[in-house]
Structures are given as structure tokens and as C-alpha cells.
Length: 449
Image 1 (cartoon, rainbow, N blue to C red):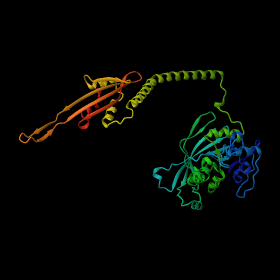
Image 2: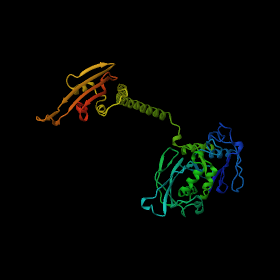
Image 3: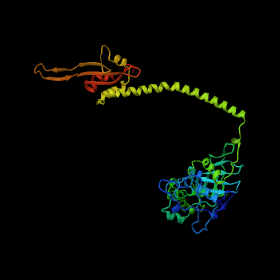
Image 4: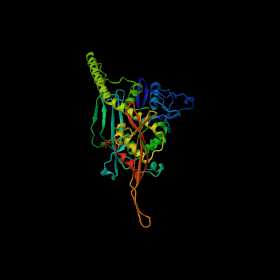
């Protein structure tokens, strides 16, 4: 089982898992002054050579100069302000192979339960973890996205961290895995090739076994990640201490790893220090192909310009109308001047606000009174009705009963010109008597409805 990388630029090799590296916190002299970025910040700039010792009684490991810089950069492509804390996005789970056929496996701990509904009460669950593979061999894909699924014992929630350590990690023996749906590989010819689901099989690939240990022990994994400060302030030593019960060896936190493409560019340049194999996408185009591509691009550009003009022709009137409407509503708000609107006036405004002045004139009937002042028109209407009657005793003169009612309506429609100089209703002012708004309530309908 191979886990870590060592060697200079001309002497790179992989080291067995029994001699893995533990990344210590920065020593006092490594801590930068306030306001300065730590020297480990950017992977593009490499990292300073440091001495690294194996903790927990393992012999000290001396790394050669070139690869020490690369390993240090992989540990933290960018560090947070706190010494020893890196803002990580992925974990390098496993490394294997000799120069020319090396592979690296990463995960950002995206896990899910894929147990079918009918098997929810079974003692075994199906757990999935997303793993990214990066390959050096020209005969293998550039990289892959693997949805690895594992058969895991149902993990009970521990009463305390101590009880969890006492029971040990949950893992099926033997550990079985299968390739889940939506797995794919990206070839060196820039083809996205789906990987078909596979049947259940024993996990012999060490990278898959490590992924299975994480997937089957999500509770322990999440607890270790949280105790290490989470992705935003990763403490690699605390993370590995928390994952130690899984027996997967050291994992390395990789900062600013937004995608496997981002990580791959860094690995080829600063870790493997090798020429990336070319593919169809790297072939130099002929002059004829370049001319054809330019012609096609020009045709697409012309088509886009045509579509843009059509979209503008369709949308611009709508945009202009909406802008004009918003401007008119702002004018209407000024006309209303923040006065308290009665319930009946509010109902009327919901119907009439923004309606053309001609509709108001038509609704009020013959001879409404129209006055104009301060750029506003007041269309006034007044009506009243008295249907009251009484029955009076001829003998005593007492009123024996009454019926009917007195109702009145005094209303003013206030209109103002909009941007197109069309006069529209901006406010309604009502004074009425009688039950339920009196005679004015009949104005709730416009001639349109």
C-alpha cells in the first residue's frame, strides 16, 4: 500500500504507508509578522524547505529538497492567517504507482446514503462517497469522478466519543463495493465517458478501501473534520488524529482545490513535474481547420447578433412600458401626498389607479365638473337621494314607523399626465353618506367591466 510522495526532481518515488508523513504546526520562526501572508500561501510559488518528523515514535524522515517543497505545497496550496491552519477543500486520500504510472485519489467527503427504501431496516446500509482519480499514464484517462458505493454495517449513534473509540470503526469484512451511477472519466481527447455501474465485489484497490472506511464511518469522519476546524481552518494534525481509528494512514488537506482540474494542473506542474500526455485536444490545427473554425465562429456571432436584435425588438417595448408605469406610480404617490386613504377610497384606487381619464369621464356620465390646477385635473361628481318616509298617527301626531334612507356621494377623480402626456387617474377623493359607502360604491366598476 502506497501513501506518500518523496524524492527530489530527479529522484521521485512513493513511500510505503509505514513511513507516512505527519505535517507539524509551524515553528515560532515560521510565523509571519501581522499583515504578511505566510510563506506557504501559494502553490504556484512553492514552499520553503522544512524539517518534518514522524510523530508517535516513528523515526525522523529526511526529504530531499525539491520534493519537500512540492509536498509542503500540496499540504497547503493556500493557508489561512492562523499558523498551521489551512483553508482546505479536498483531501488527498491515496497515492500509488511508479513514475510514468502514478495515480492520486482525492475526496471532498461528499457522502450519501443509497440504501433502498425496502432495506432501511436491514443491518447493512449502502453508503456512497465521491472520489476523484488523477492518472499519469498516457493510456489512462486524464481524470475520473467515481461514485463509490460500499456495504456498511448500520452505524449506531454513540453515547460519547469515548464509546465510539471503544467500539472501533464500523466496517464490513470483507469490504464490498460497486461503481454507482453518474460516475465518469474524462479522456485526454476531452471526451466525457460515462462509467457503467458494476456488480458488488471485494475492495482490493487500497484507494477504494480507504474511501470505504470513510463512507462507512461518516459520523467519525465528520467529527474529526469538525474537531480539526472544518474546511475553512483545517489543522491537518488534528484531522489525522481524529481519523486514526480508521487505519487509513495519513491524509493530506489540499487548499483552494475548487475542482479536480484545478488540482490536476498543480500536480502535473509541481508534484509530478512531468509533461502531461497530449490528446486530440492538444493537436495543432491546420490552417484550413483554423479558417473553418473562424468562419463558423463568425456565423455564430452573426446569428447571436440577429437573435439579440430580435430579443431587443421584443423586450424593449415591454421594458419601456414598465419603466413608464413605474414613473407614473411615483407621480401618483406624490399626488396622494401620504394622506390617509379610507377603506372605500382604497378599494376604488385598486380599480381606477392608472386608468385613462376618458374612462372616468365616461363612468361619471353627463356633465361632470372638470377643473385644473397645479398640473392636475379634478373631475368631480356629486349625487344624492332621499328615500326616507314616515307613518304618523293622525290622532296623536306620533311617528309610528320610518323607512328609506338618505345617501350622497361627492367624488373627485384626480388625473395627471404620464410620460406620453396621456391623462390618467392618480388619486380618488370621496365624501359619502349612507350605508356601505352610499351611492359612491357603484363607481367600483369601470366601463371596461
